[in-house]
Image 1 (tube, rainbow, N blue to C red):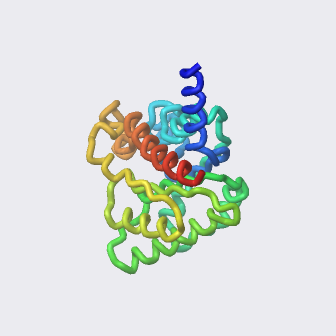
Image 2 (cartoon, helix red, strand yellow):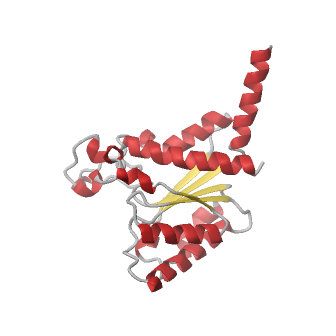
Image 3 (cartoon, helix red, strand yellow):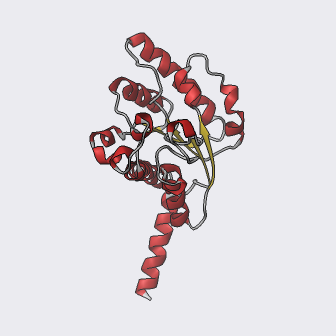
Length: 225
């Protein structure tokens, strides 16, 4: 009887930790979602460069939440690399479907494709654009928003993302240390003809990204219940 009660309490605690994760929206770049492209030797449609779709951070995180809560969350995944490259002129109308999805949890994983922020003016412009993006995502249903730092560590970009995230009331997740460990790169797991693909996180890197996001999500959701 004691074991059964203990197990029940453990399940309730775990479920509460991820409460409010019925609908998760993932917005990112190629690390989040990239279609197959034979010219660079990439044959999957998932986060580059996981060895299989189920091994990218989106699938790992989704599976972990479902296992913990007992209900698989409904997810939507969108590549917004265009925002990174042209953040000053990006039309937020392109996020219409994502906004209509009404997620209760949103994970923003950008930064890698943002042009170098070589001046304070550039940082200010990027920050202003990120704030507009986060404000649109927040909308009226006030979801939990997680913003992670770049996988390829960049102090200027990461600090700007952190500032915008905190001002918007989001949760910043620092994964900048992952790139210091070569084993997190896909090139450490298998050979790729294209150096760009090889520089993406491999299976170990994807697991580490998911672990960092899940830790933040668990803490955030536990504190909010």
